[in-house]
Length: 158
Image (cartoon, rainbow, N blue to C red; front, side):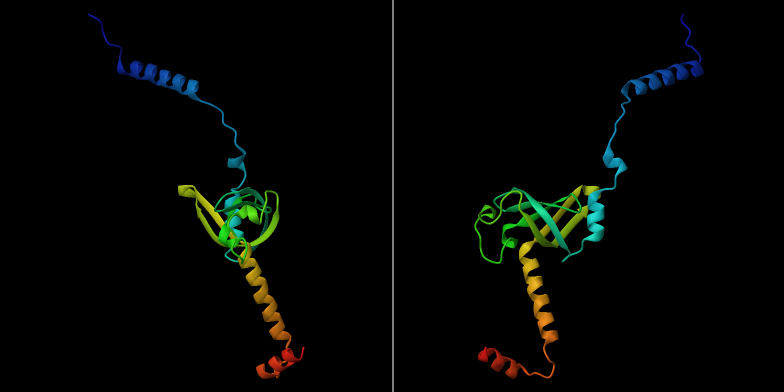
C-alpha cells in the first residue's frame, strides 16, 4: 500500500509548480502610455466649452471632418453643420485633408472608465463669437450719449 506524502510536502511541490507556471507565462510589456499622462486628461482640464483651438484636418467623412488638435495631439470631430454658416452638402466641398483651421470647443465627453473620449468643435461658432466680440467692442467705443436714432441717421448719411 502506497503512503501519501505529508501535506506540507505536497503543498510545497504544488506551490513550486505554480511558481514555475507563472514564470513561463510572464511577459515584459513596455508602454509609453503608462509613463506619459493621458492627453485627453490635459485637454479636458484645459479646454472648456467655447475655448479656441487650432488643428489640422486629417480625415473627411460624409458627416464631417476629423481634426487633429495641434496642442493636445488628440482628434476632434467637426460636424458638417458646424463647418460654415452657409449650407454645404459635403465637407469635401469646403475642406481638404491637411487644411489648418481655427474653431471652438462645443462639447467634450471624457469617461475613462468606459473608455469614451470625444470632442466636438465648430468653425461656425468661432465666426459667430468673433462677430459678437467685434460688435461689443464697437458699441463700447461709441459715445454713450449718442442715441440709437442718431446712429441710424449717421449710418444713412454714409
